[in-house]
Each structure stands twice: as C-alpha cells, then as structure tokens.
Amino acid sequence: MSQLPKLSFGKLATPKSGTAVVFAGEDLAFGELSAEFVNGVTGGIERAAKVAGFKGKKGSHLDLIAPAGLEVDRLIVVGIGSAADMDQNGWTKLGGTVMAALKSAKAEQASIVFEPATVVEALSHKASAFALGIKLAAYNFDTYKTKAPVEDDADKGKDKPVKIDIAIEDAKAAKKAWEADAAISDGVCLARDLVNEPANMLGPVEFAKKAAQLEKLGVEVEILGEKEMKKLKMNALLGVAQGSVRPAQLAIMRWNGGKKDDKPLAFVGKGVVFDTGGISIKPGAGMDEMKGDMGGAATVTGLMHALAGRKAKVNAVGVIGLVENMPDGNAQRPGDIVTAMSGTTIEILNTDAEGRLVLADALWYTQERFKPALMIDLATLTGAVIIALGNHNAGLFTNNDGIAEQLTAAGQSTEELVWRLPLSKDYDKLIDTPNADVKNIGGRSAGSITAAQFLQRFVNDVPWAHLDIAGTAMGAPKTEINTGWASGFGVRLLDRFVADNYEG
Ligand code: BES
Ligand code: MN
Ligand code: ZN
Image (cartoon, rainbow, N blue to C red; front, top):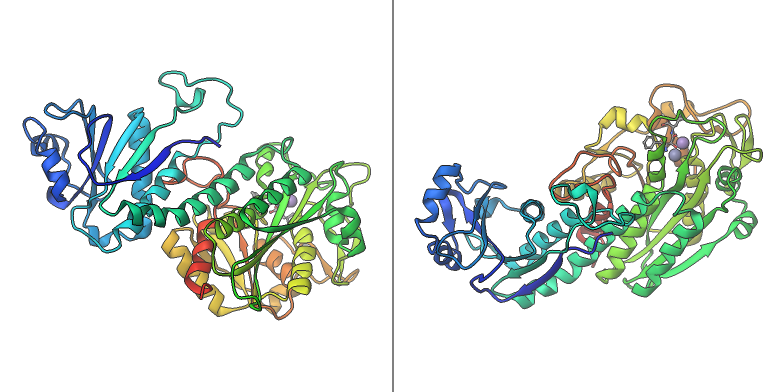
C-alpha cells in the first residue's frame, strides 16, 4: 500500500505556502478566517467564481493557480452546499474529492482550513471523517511498481507523498477523533491490500501470517493447520483445499474490549485465496479476478484491525477459512460426498460452489466454540448476486429482523449498502438430494438464495446474517473514496454496525 499522504492536525492559521484549501457554502459563504484569506486574491474571488460558474455547491470546487495577492501557489475552494446537510459520510466523501483535486494538481504540500462556512456541531469529528476520506481516496495498490512516477501518467509509477495539514480551531479534539478514524482507515486499507495481493504472494499460510500480525494491536490470534482441522472433522473445508499444494488454515482473531462475560459478536469470512473452480473449472476470461475470492476473510481481518485499533468496547471474534481451490490429481470431484464438522453429509455436485463448503465448517466451529451473541459471515459467494444487485448493494440474508434493520441502517450511513433477500423453506428444498443430507448447488434459479440456504443449514438458532459481497468487494464502480479495484467493502459498514448498536 502506498504510504501517502502524510496527515497532521494543526491550529487554525492562514496558509503561507503550497496549496491552500478552504470551504465555501452556497453563494460563497465563507468562515471568518477563510473569508479574510480569499479576500487577499487580487481582483477578488467572486470574479473567478463567476467565470468558473462556481457557487459553492456540494462537491464542486474552484481551482486558482498562482493566485495573485496570496503567498500560496494554489488555492482550491471546495463547495459544501449547506453545512447542515453534510452528514459524517458527506465529509468523508468530500475528503475524497479534495484528495482527487490535490492528486491532479500534483500538490506536495497542502493546508486545509477546516472552517466550514456555517459552523456546525462537533467540528472535530467532521474533520476526522474528512481525513478518513483523504486517506481512503489516496489509497493506491502500488506494491509491485518499481519505478518512480512518469510525468503525465500516474499509472506508470508510484505517487509522490503529499503533506496535508488540517488547520482547525480545536486541533487537539480533531487529533483525538482521528485516532478512531485512522484505525478504520487502516482496517479498510488492510482489507484492500489483501484483496489486491496476487495469489502467488498470498496463499493460506501467508494470509494467516497477516492475521497473526494483529497481535500487535492486542488481538489474540490462533492459527489452525490441516492436522488440527482434521481432528475437528472439518471435511467440507478440507475437501476444497485438497487439490492445492498449499495447506488450508483457519485463523481465529479475538478482540476482548467488552465486559468479561459478554458473549462475543462473531464475524466469519470466506478466504479462498484463488478460485479456479477446481475440477468444475472456470472459463479463462477474467479468472484472474478470483485472486479476490478471499474478500470476506479480508473484510473480517480489516474489521478486527479497526475494532482493536480504536479499542472498541466490545468482544469480537473473527474466524476466517483460508484455502485454495485448484484442479489436481488429488482434487475433489463432482459427485463426492463429504461429512462436515456438524455431521451433515454434503454431496458436491459442482466443485466451483466451494465457498459455502468452507463457510459450513467455519460457521459451525464458531457457533460451537464461542456461543456468540450473533454471527455475521461475509463471502464473495455467488456470481448470481451481481446479476441480482449489481455492484451497488451487497446481498443480505438473515434469520433475524433486528439485525437486518441494524445492518441496513449502518449501510445507509456509511454508503456501504446492503439489500435483504429472502430465505424460506421452499428455497431450502432446492438443495435437497437423494444421495446425502444436502447438495452444494441448487438449480439455475435463485443462485444466491440457495447458497444462503446452504449456509443456514450450518447455523442453529444463533442470530445470523450472511453478506454476499461478490459484487461489492471488488470491481465496483469508482467513488470519491474508492478509486481502485478492491474496495474493502464491509469494514466501515460493520464497524458502524458495532459502534451504533453494541458498544455499551
Ligand atoms: N467465487 C465465486 C463467486 C464469484 C463470482 C465471486 C464472480 C466474485 C465474482 C464462487 O465460488 C462461485 O464460483 N460460485 C458459483 C456457484 C455455482 C457453481 C453454483 C457461481 O456463482 O457461478
Ligand atoms: Mn467458485
Ligand atoms: Zn469462490
């Protein structure tokens, strides 16, 4: 991950060099210091705004190069519309907009005068939300770029770091608020890095090592290898891995920030480091994208990072099943029947429906061992969810209306949206088979639902939700704060879900 930008919070002051960023409300309403500053522009800011048609509309900006009368090299005026309409996520998106402007200006140093036109409550939290947007928009997967930037072609090399100072009245409070948002930012960027990383570099063992690094944040991490999983009779998960030379791993991450006796919230992730489809092999076109089939596990790891990093007052456990799905002389075949840890027998009719096999054992294990208050799994589970919802909503399946409401609300406030799809006995029948307790595929129709029904057979009465993130974890349309392939979808959503409902 690129390390840019370098962010700091300082006291409110007039920018003297580099790029200055100030905010304007509708009809060029400035804060006191910003007004005084822009009044220094020879000829006045109104003239430039008029020429550019800039009226302070939310998300728009006015870019003045070498503004006569000012000491700075560049002045960017950013519109916020009405400050009262700007919610937390609005500020985060605005941070992304500003980062894009700084990138295209090739700015090396910027001072942001965080003095919105209409003073709004809890300004420090808004500045911190804004900084989150800056960080998320600056993210760039350039680990394997070996060359310095080539002029006029940012794709050809690494970006230069930009130094950004946010100047704000209560810099101390902003810095304090940033501690939490920085942890969230790091969690999202960790999830993105894991998804972007190619499978030759990130196998199950390498991924488990990344999870183990959370120990630095006070997370307790255990890694189970194939021997331990065999003992636990996790034959559904192990069956998927048996065609790969790389051994399966189960990583368990525990963050104990809540009361000692509080049952944990459990998050379970599908971690298929590469999904060829196995013997039911996938077509070649676009198969490279299956390096991201560990997106659920990446989100769980990023979430645990965020929760521990901001010392969330909650007990949480993350469990990720890490395997590689390969065709091989030892690979599992269509028609094979395996017995899952729960004792349920599964007829495997398509080795490409592997994620649900991994989750079957990971969910059962989590529920049996931790007796969680609730359990949420995340998985790039089905292509069908992309057909149903495109890239703008994750599919949500749950046995609990309360969780559905909480997740939907958290989705709306972070704009990591979820849309509930049904579960029912009728759909459940579609995965019955004469040869075993259950089969791992339904028919052609309702593919995401039958996948979810399959998972539900490995969940007892515990409140549970399944998020199918095949369309949102990767390849989603670019936004203000997501400019690359891997989005880190779910980290901000679930962090908010926890913060709003489960922290005291
Ligand atoms: N990992 C895929 C689902 C996927 C597809 C994720 C596209 C991201 C983008 C999953 O393992 C899979 O192959 N599912 C099959 C299920 C089918 C065989 C029942 C699918 O969706 O086609
Ligand atoms: Mn598959
Ligand atoms: Zn898969």
